[in-house]
Length: 115
Length: 190
Image 1 (cartoon, rainbow over the protein chains, first blue to last red):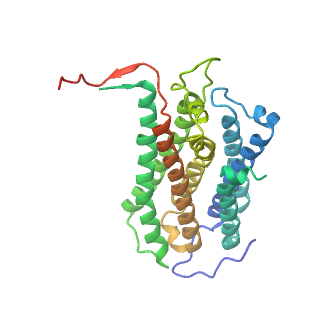
Image 2: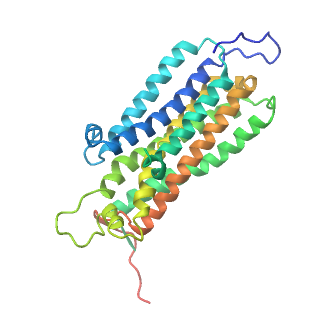
């Protein structure tokens, strides 16, 4: 997904877009992962029980904690790989927004119940 | 005039953090739109740039505080299970909603969606704040980055709006009650 940096001009950026792309894709991934884990916990009693990290809050505590950890992990890994690169941001943004929209859909109970 | 401790927490969560976040979102979206609609945004001063960074960081703090108080302070009261044989469910909002087919949807659709989708708001706005803090005035050189940030800020607003709407409606039909009572003022006789 790497492309060459554009030739220098008065508006040439000093920072590459890689760090921003890493943040955008990881945010989309985090929202999608949260929705998938929430669906899994809703379907399986074993998974639901596994995600009870804090009993008064129930499985929501584990589902959200796990999703946040995965989001941060993906962000750190992508940032380390892309921070000095210029990447194809249009494609990355489309992927991130697709994941975000799927996240919204999969958390919506009538859709989540289909699976 | 009195209020219970749990109602105060609900107010702090919903009106304090949640509603304030939604208000802040509307301001941020206007600014993002201004930045995104121009191919090369008008130059900003250092002071304006610093203000926007602090504003977005404060929004991220607000969003995280809203979801954390919701999940770890209010939600345990909402989902508490009543002792066997309890007839008065007014202290158990989830069970109160589930006991009435006319309002069960506020739990089965409203709370089930809200409790998960609300987390999209802090995750998205944290990313937005990070990009602004990292790039600052350099964002003027990254049109696609600005557009993506606007999209995620809008998603954050939408997620917070869904959570806020269902939170308000659930509190209308099955409010979280209990805890000690705080006397705000003594009413006079009519």
